[in-house]
Every structure is written in structure tokens, then in C-alpha cells.
Image 1 (cartoon, rainbow, N blue to C red):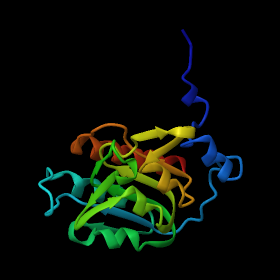
Image 2 (image 1 turned 120 degrees about the horizontal axis):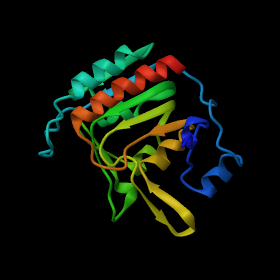
Image 3 (image 1 turned 90 degrees about the vertical axis):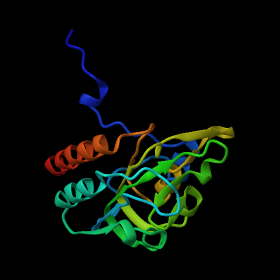
Image 4 (image 1 turned 90 degrees about the horizontal axis):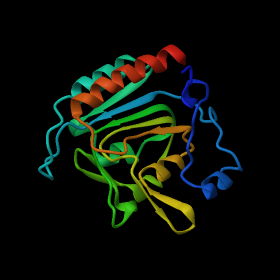
Amino acid sequence: GDARYLAEDFVLSYAPSASFVLRSGGTVQRGTATTGPSVVVGVSRTTYLPLETLGDVQQEVTAVAERLGDHSVLQDDEAGRRSLLDLRGAIDVLHLACHGEFDEDDPLLSRLYLADGPVYAYELLGLAARPRLIVLSACESGVRAVEAGDESFGLIRPLLTTGSDAVLSSLWKISDRGAAAFMKVFYEQRRQFA
């Protein structure tokens, strides 16, 4: 009948575990990160592994950058491991469009494929940047393994330790074209409601 979805009336948030919430002071707070410029990272091809070329990453990066205020773009050869790991300070949005892969055997070896090599989940624990929003436009970037004590591991947990308010990620393999189209609409809506 006239039933409504919960998400129509409330903002839904997920924490990786109860212990994560306790370590963050007993509550997951929104809007706590300081804003700064945004960083848009796009990697359409890798030379170190024969991964499929992501032909729509350029289009996605351009569309995302047009919808953000102050921003910088790191694309293909500029989008290396050090470029990401050396980011510092407050960032409004950190958007990463690249290949991603979840590692079932060791979730902390889940990775994002950048121009000159993969960045592993455990390396993201040391990320010195403090993005308010992190967007992972990459396959399996939200998949996680739940370990003893209800602890979850994958790419999301290390990114939340940066103090980010939110991480947008995918639980499955996504098409390059579909991701580009979705991100364009996502950022248009974000700009309308910001």
C-alpha cells in the first residue's frame, strides 16, 4: 500500500563493528571531518598486470571533477601509490576510480590497483589524509570478512580510521560504464543536497 522504505525517512549508516563504534567514542558521528579541497584519482590502465582497460574512467573523472568545488585530479601515470599514500590534511572528497579486488584469504591484502602498483588495505591504515567522504568506484571495494569478535576487515575499515564521515563502496563487480553513469548522478544529487 502506502508503505515507505526506511531510507526515505532516515539516513542509514553502518559501522564495521561494535568495537569500532566504541573506539570512536561510543557513537558514529557525521559531519565531524574538516573539509578541504577534493582529490579525484582515476586509473584506466595498469602496465604491471594485464587488467582490463577501464575505458570510461576518463569520462567519470571529468564528470566528478566538474561537480566538485576546489579539487585536483590525478589520472593514469600521475595516479601512483605514492600520490595516494602521501596525501595529507583535510580533504572534502577522495574519489578513486580504478580496479579493486577483495582478498578472501587475507582481507588486509585487499587492494586498489593504481598506475604503478596496488595499494593494500593494511597500507591505508597509515593514510595521513582526512577525507570527509571517500568514494571507491572500484569492484569489490566494500566486501569484507567478519573475523572473531565481530571484527570486519577489508578496504573500508582502514579508510574509516582516517576519521572519514563515510565511505561509498561496492559489494560486487561493477561495469565501468555503469560506475561512470552512477557517479555522475551521485555527485549531482550530492551537490543539490549539500
